[in-house]
Image (cartoon, rainbow, N blue to C red; front, top):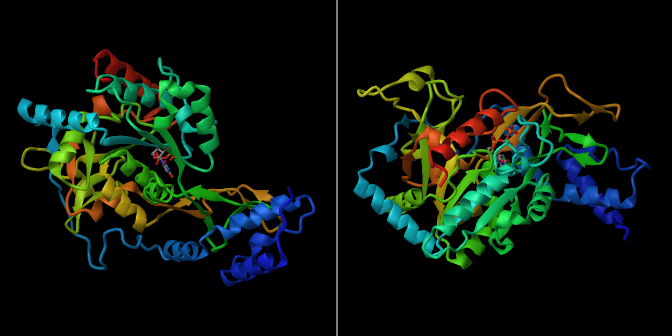
Length: 432
Ligand code: UTP
C-alpha cells in the first residue's frame, strides 16, 4: 500500500522545521530515487521528533552547561562520602537473614530482572546486538549466559518459578535480538516470562545546531542512554506489567558484565532491609584512576561522581584505615522498587552530552566521514535516578565474583579477560 503525504501534512512539517532552523532535513525529499512510501516514512519519523527538546539540549551542549536537574540547585556542589555495607564483613547471622528475606521475596513472585541491551557496543565492534556475542565459554552468547544463570536460580528457588525477565533493546537492535531468542528457543526460558521493550532515540546534532542526516532521507538517531530505561519502561507498560504480576523489587543490570548476578537473594534481602527506593552494588576501585564512576553524596543525596569529574585529590584520598574515601565504583548493578521505577519513568532524567564522530550528508549531498568529532549525542545515565531518593543502600561485593565486563575488542575489559574471569568463577563454584 502506498502511503501518501497530504499537502497539508507537508506544509505543517515544513513550517515546523523552518521555525526550528532545521529546513535542511527536507533537502532530499525531491530526490527522484525515492518512492512515495520512503518519503512518507521519513515525514512520519520527523513528526516523531521532539524539536523543542532537541533545541534545548543543543543549547545546553553548546553552552557547555551541566545537565539540568542532575542534582544541582545552582549553588556550589557539595560532594561527600556515602556509607557503604561491605558484604565481606557481614556476620553469618546478617548474611543468613538477608538471604532468607531475598529468597522469600523471590518465592512470592515479587522479584523481576531487567537486562539493558540497547547499547551500540561501538568499542567491541561486533556485527549484531552485543548480547549475541560469544566469548568462547559453554554458553554461546552473553544472552545465554544470563538466561542460564536466571534459570539455575529459579530451579533452586522454593517453588521453581521462572523469574520474569525484561530486556531493553534499541530500535537498531530490537528485531535482531528477538530473532536471536527465537532461533535459540529462548535458551529454555518460557517466552511468556520474557518481554522485550525498546528505548527511545534522540537525533544527533552537529556543532552548528543542524540535526545530522546520514542519508538523503534519514536522520542520524542515537539511543538515549541507559538512563532512558525509566521512560521506556513507563511508556511501554513494563512497570504496569510488573505490578500486575505482583513484582515489588527489580534488578537492573547491563548485558556486558558476564559475572552479573541478575537474581541475588543477598542483594534483594539487603535492599528490602534498607527500605530505600533503590540500592546499588559497588566494588573497590583497582587504583585511584580506574575509569569508573564512584558512589558519593551530592548535595546530601546519593549520586555517582564520574571519573571525568573527580579531582586528583578526591580520587587519591584515603581514610584513617587506608581505604579510599571515594573508592566504591558503580558497576551498573542496581535494584529499584517498582514504585521508584514508576516515579522516575513519569518524570524522566536529565540528558548528558557526548561529543561523537558521525557520518553526515555534506553540502554537496554526499555522505562524508569526518576526521574529528562533529556532533553531540544526548544520553541519560541510570545513576541520575539515585538522587531522587533521600538515601540508598550500597552493598560492596567482590570484583572477582561479580564483575567481568566486555567492552573492548582486545586488551582490558575484552572477551579474553571476561572469559578468564568467568571460567575462574565457574571453577570456584561462584556462578550460582
Ligand atoms: P556502555 O555505556 O558500556 O555502552 O553500556 P555500550 O553500548 O555497551 O558500548 P560502547 O560504549 O558503544 O562501546 C553499558 C550497558 O548499558 C547498556 C548497554 O547495552 C550495556 O549493557 N546501554 C547503554 C543501553 O541499554 N542503552 C544505551 O543507550 C546505552
